[in-house]
Length: 168
Image 1 (cartoon, rainbow, N blue to C red):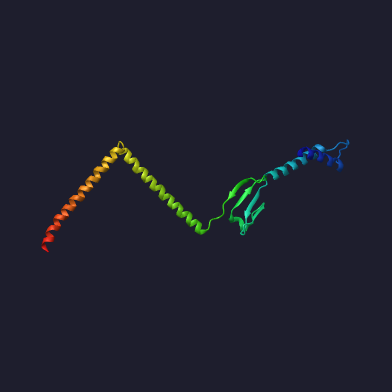
Image 2 (image 1 turned 180 degrees about the horizontal axis):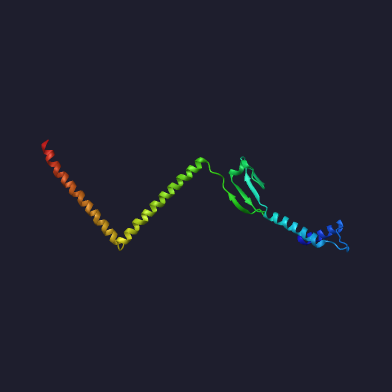
């Protein structure tokens, strides 16, 4: 509808302005093409126009086609002509926030390393033993062996302590 009105208005402008050739006809085709091209270019520009949204130091939200330099590092949202978010830019981090982010990354890497180590150990157990009962039997034998070593050591200490007690 807008395009039709533009073409009709362009032809009307040509008639009013008196653009005619020798035969009395209008040079409307050339004029209409030029006007149509200009109109389409304007429509294309309007369709690609993007709006920037940013917040100042007082928390007030502003809109415009360019973000002022003093607010460039605060984060912003780019909206299309319908107001839909196209792109979002996060604010720049402070030194403290960067340091915290770095520490968090170190912690996450350490946790990932520990998970990998635990998975490696689990795989080793699964590859070594046929089932859970076998793992429990081996564990119980190891604990029994440790208990026996403790008992032997206690007996030996008792035997060593007897002669020392009689000397006194």
